[in-house]
Length: 162
Ligand code: ZN
Image 1 (cartoon, rainbow, N blue to C red):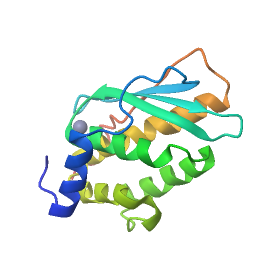
Image 2 (cartoon, rainbow, N blue to C red):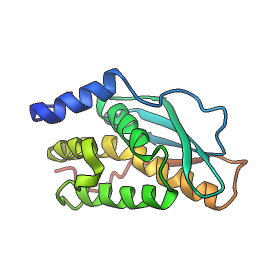
Image 3 (tube, protein in one colour):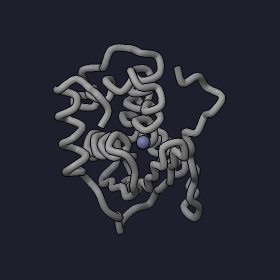
Image 4 (cartoon, rainbow, N blue to C red):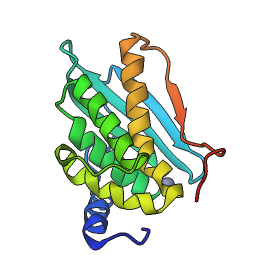
């Protein structure tokens, strides 16, 4: 784990060691796969969306560094039981926090711990992977595109890594 403030570190380590919503989801009706080749992080995200657009259940599998795994756990814990448009708002708030450096929004709760990763530009991709994959899974469901799996990559070599 990178050198984070103690509070951030505690939260992320807890989610890394005891990931929430980890495993396959038999009832899934949307899914996406994401990878961050720069670090070797991989995630498969599965969602069960009900007819009202609520994320009734969510689970992830995959391997990667502690930050990517902790972020996946935090993200699934947050969106489980929420409407997909709330999840989309959370994705936007997360991106604003990580990419644009905005203050961690209070409603994101422990997810704000990931703001500590901003000091390490390479690791921002690790933290963002779960959220980009969520965005893709929701888009896939909106298209009623049940048969295919989408792949997102956070490998953006052209961007500055400080
Ligand atoms: Zn990583």
